[in-house]
Amino acid sequence: MRKPPANIDKQNAVIRIRGLYKSFDTIDVLTGMDLDLYKGENVVVLGRSGSGKSVLIKLIAGLLKPDSGTIRVAGEEIDQLSPGALQQLRLKIGFLYQGSALYDSMTVRENLEFPLVRNSAHLTHEERDAAIREVLKNVGLEQSIDKMPAELSGGQKKRVGIARTLILHPDIMLYDEPTAGLDPVTSGDINTLINEVQQTYRTSAVIITHDLTCAKSTGDRVALISDGKFCVEGSFEEVFQSGDAEAKKFYDYNFIVDT
Image 1: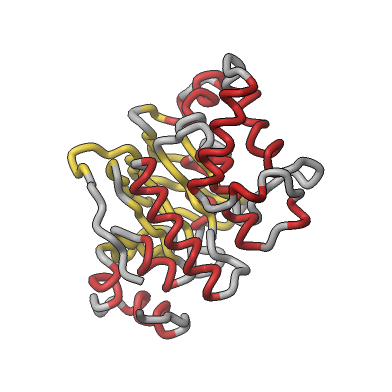
Image 2: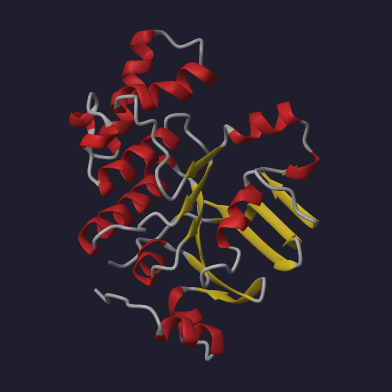
């Protein structure tokens, strides 16, 4: 699947990262990383296991603090915000965890209703129900509204996880390994959905993955981490035709379906 064109505003960086460092004990994970994410753009971040991909999006979401460097999200320097201001900023960010992170004891409806009750208490029951049905329709799961997570397939859980992030209409989406553990056909469906979310909700996204098919299908730009920073970035073709040694090794040890 080829990535459909996106409406990207390169004069408007919704995320701007400069000189980002993060270590854990004696292990240096990020070592001076720079990154811009522009409004309307999907950026795919690739890297080997342990390269710092998931650490990066946790830093963007304010779940971790950097050792040094700056992270500006929607114009706010994230590690300088008060807890209340950080919580308000997070309402603009949709975070899809690798495992979807659904509440097993709640139905699909209740999983989606939870963030609405918590953050949009002014909505009536009818308004909440309409919002839930709309977002489920947009991810193709309206018929599953009263199912429990245990009754869903892995791909359906991913869709519900995406729906739950979309229920508050975030400006920025953070996807952590969105196709992990899925078969190729279901992975393709999730890739299509990521692009549909970008178009329908006009989101900007950072997509963390090691799946080259996902990268090629969803990324307007691809950035490859090596030694704690980006060694090469550009379109999928530019990255993997660049002659960069790390890009060649990453490509050679991954499987990609070219369609």
